[in-house]
Image 1 (tube, one colour):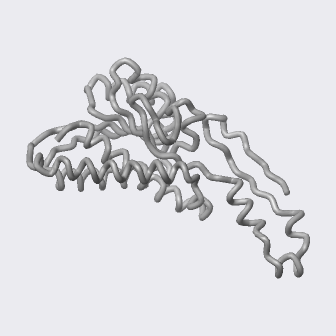
Image 2 (image 1 turned 30 degrees about the vertical axis):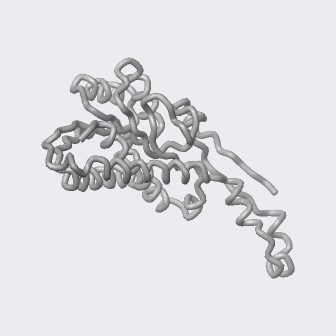
Length: 227
């Protein structure tokens, strides 16, 4: 089984499972941008295609090593890691391969994070998975020469962070999932014309607001929208 097929399946797993984990934080997360959804769908289709094309390679005994670094001990981020590990176990069974997972958590310490990634590089892992924007960016920098594939999860703005060229065509050796929250869609949903509300509580359109913490690439500066 070729590495690119494992890469495609891990990408699909990271996309679908990270979005599922993030949906537990807020019901609004189900309104993620259409571009993110289309990227996830494309990755899923790629995964299915890869699985079909490698059916004859099952039980090949191939072995791969994947390094996963989590940014901090957080319920939603931990759930992403658990889901990816679960999918990796399924891939092992389905494809008859062996996947060794090297996992670590840097606990938001940049020095520790860089050391973890350096260890992954020294171990010559086949794939790196970065959970959260800081980890993904550090992995991107660390793999500029080696071009080791990198899959990220829980990144709100991969384009703004410089991780990918676009959501449709990531380019380079980095791809993954975005948990971006489309605040405009949320506000439009909140302020959707409701005759009953406008008649009973006309003040609602003047005093409704939405406070959202932006992605880490912009240092978490809150975005405030008024209507």
